[in-house]
Image (tube, rainbow, N blue to C red; front, side, top):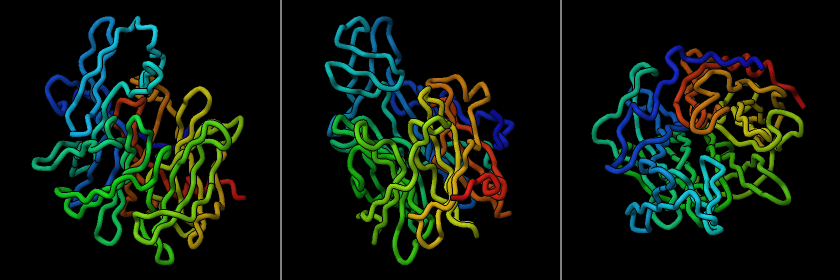
Length: 352
């Protein structure tokens, strides 16, 4: 299936071997799904870094955070009858789910949008407290009225929810706790207020009634959210038949708020599509692409820690106003870049 993405010639831009592990005894398994923003005339990525201990023969080992922030390593023999390890990302042991890696968020920057490096004197963002013992993941970043809002996935044995931190200087952060409780993720705040309110896309999940759909919420302060609407559902028989979730902040266009989102099918193939919301009432979805705008096709997208995946939660609209540069996770292992024409995406939308 052909897509309309123009991939960077230097992809992958970042691989696990490109940056050091956060501490001795761990190794980086994956780099995933960066949040993206501009600061001090540079392009910045807030990359999800997934780590685990070096694996020993016949043993599965993985780290978790204690409530005090210390790392605890759990080791389980692979032949333990109470171990279910059919997924590279999640195992089940004695009826409890665990992640095989522990994720934190790492800042990298670039003068040209291609070559990224870790700047000095910027902190790692790590899980803290009982709701983040399995780490924090997949951050979206948006700048509103001088403040950067960071929404990310908080993971623990209590469930998966949306955490929020804010900053103005990327050195100190205000922690707002979990703003959307489990089970929820893929939270992208709009880049400006609408009629005085914050708006955000999010993805509550249900394994029984309902499904993995995209919802809309509003807030008076960016912290307390309500007035929820389900606006995008999965589509049987199409590329987004199993789950859908928001990418980064919607892009404001003359036609409406344009959102690039991910969808997956029953075979766990992740592609990207788009939909358009009304400018003054984003609960009204005007149009949606029928076919994906990006499909895993390159080797680095087809094989890796968890293959057949393209996933984005960060982009920059270039000065020409039409080019959007997305930074995306490929096969749950690499960070890559690609560009789209906003005009071309809009031309592919099927209006309601």
